[in-house]
Amino acid sequence: MADALDRLAPVSEAGPLSGLDMAELRARRNALQEAELALSYVRRQVQVRLDIVLDERQHRAVGAAARDASALVADLPKILAEHGGGAARGSFPDVAVPPEAVEAVVADLDTIIGARELGAVGSLPGERLDAVADQLEVFERRVSQRRRALHGAIDALQEEMLRRYKTGEASVDALLQ
Image 1 (cartoon, helix red, strand yellow):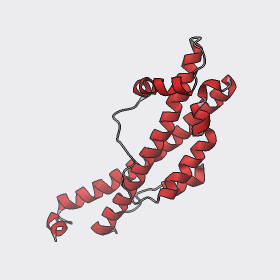
Image 2 (cartoon, one colour; image 1 turned 180 degrees about the vertical axis):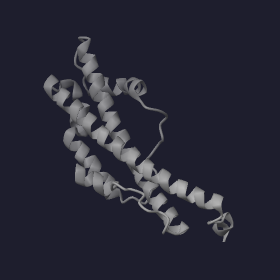
Image 3 (cartoon, helix red, strand yellow; image 1 turned 30 degrees about the horizontal axis):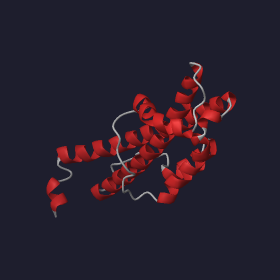
Image 4 (cartoon, rainbow, N blue to C red; image 1 turned 30 degrees about the vertical axis):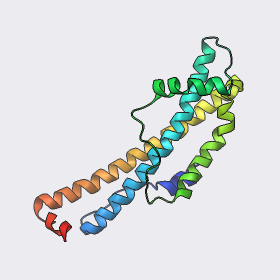
């Protein structure tokens, strides 16, 4: 998982920015923003699976009967609305991050719980359900930490660009040429 996640969104420090020209600052910022969008997509993939697994654990905790796939599908709107973290963003955005980098991270996620097993979550033994929940929580934390690091690097680049515009080192007019 670490290798695929590292390829998708390498840990990036903004580093010394004073020697970079505005084009390089923008290019770095844009690359980091694209990686962040890809990580957001991956994070949502993790969260959906975690929401389903946690809901199944709660379902069992109240003594309800096991759900089959059709009952799970019927309950999905409720599950995802209760555990969802904000408005849906629709399909995966068009970014320059290679699709195989995203697919590799999702493949790692599938090793924790794939679509077939997720669809039959009601039949999983309790121990397996607990192990999957724990692994998904760890995965989600790693993706979220990586996103926060990207946000920090993006913010540093933005601040340097803004500083240059404010001090006159860079000109908005140059953007229009």
